[in-house]
Amino acid sequence: MNSAAQKEIIAAIITPPGEGGVGAIRVAGDGALALCAPFLNWGERKDGSGGGSDTPEAFMMRYSPFAKSPGGEALDETLAVWMPRGKSYTGDEQVEIFCHGGMIVLRSILQTLFDAGAKPAEPGEFTKRAFLNDRIDLTRAEAVAEMISAKSEFALGAARDNLFGKTGDLIKSMRERLVTLLATLESYVDFPEEEIDSDDYDLLLSICEEVTGTLSALIDSYRGGALIRDGFKIALAGRPNAGKSSLFNALLRKNRAIVSQSPGATRDYLSEWITLGEFTVMITDTAGLRETSEEIESQGQNFAKRILSEANLTLWLVDSSIDSWPTDAKSDLSEADLARTLIVANKTDLAHKEFGIELNVKTYPLSCKTGEGLAELEKIVLEFILKSMPDQTDGLIVTSERHLNKFREALGQMRLVMEGIAEKKSPELIAFDARQATRALDEITGVVYTDDILEQIFSKFCIGK
Image 1: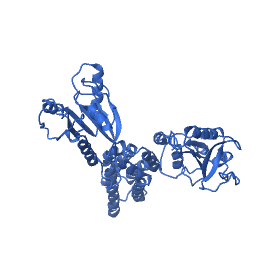
Image 2: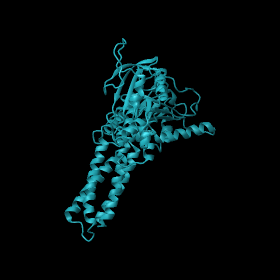
Image 3: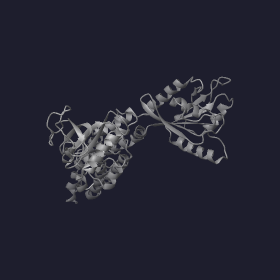
Image 4: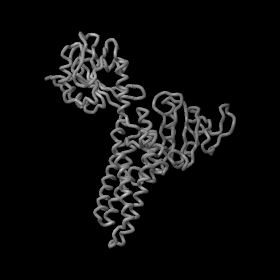
């Protein structure tokens, strides 16, 4: 965003769409107060007494009707607050208007502001301005979107750490160490004939080991971070007519998938989010896996195989009323990752005998028809999720793929720095690699940025944030 665009007054509804008790509109930019003032009577009381004012006290929320036109008929009763430049969320001059939460009244007020000269805010534009006005760094800006989209307490905790600057502070600490390293190296650049003395050599290696250790730990944390960010994914799989759709409906507590006695009824996959304990979990009902020459069913099975490869846990359903199911399951799961597979023996209400399986994997009995075993299965799944989640008390967990790539880039450069020191290369060459590592860290926080980076980040935001 150039400086001219940043001065434009932008406006958007900042509350979720739909009906609600209260809705809100944010107006930001140089002249926001002057644009809004003609439609507001800041000092008027509900009984009509009291004079209006175009210059309200900053941060004082005041009652005011909002007029269709300056001095005209009121659209709604509102509360409004003015925030001066440098002291608002965006860093721009800002007005926020709170009205009744129906979309018609919100859109009517917003359109009035557009007619007066405000521009519609782009997705993430308020937060983008906060970054450009040095109110927040890029890690905190990204955390705003992460807070909104958090699907679990784990995701909320990770986003909150970033919002309060945990990532930015750690990067700042590493950057300060690299500045010390660069200063030491550059003291030798003008004297190439001098070798790095032993004390400085030890200092340089100490900084490299410290920074590379931190970077390695951050990169290693991403596997758990991706799980936190994307949510836990469970796939229901098995042969046709094993009861996958019945279990899907049972877990959802509603009839979402078609249940049929005919094998191959599920040709596509269905996905829904459900709540298990404190987690929001995506559960997917897949097509039954069997040999088939039918094209549509075959395509559904290809989808199923892809979903199974991406799932964090697979519930493999078998029909326990069929005597051969243990042998069939052993064959079907011969190449499966049994560490993330639970075998669910469905239709126990029809089973003819006690069952067992020689896969070194416990089998969980269930009857989707009677509900017997469902609560126990949900408990087992919840325990599996808890064990899979990373320990957030161990330190910062990387949840952003963008951050991961930059940490990897910085680590690669730091390894070159260590090689250069060990091989006694020119301090100037070593310093070049150290600067590249520093730049990678700076791109995470936004000390260095391009328009492409900003577009990549803020295009993912919703309008109003």
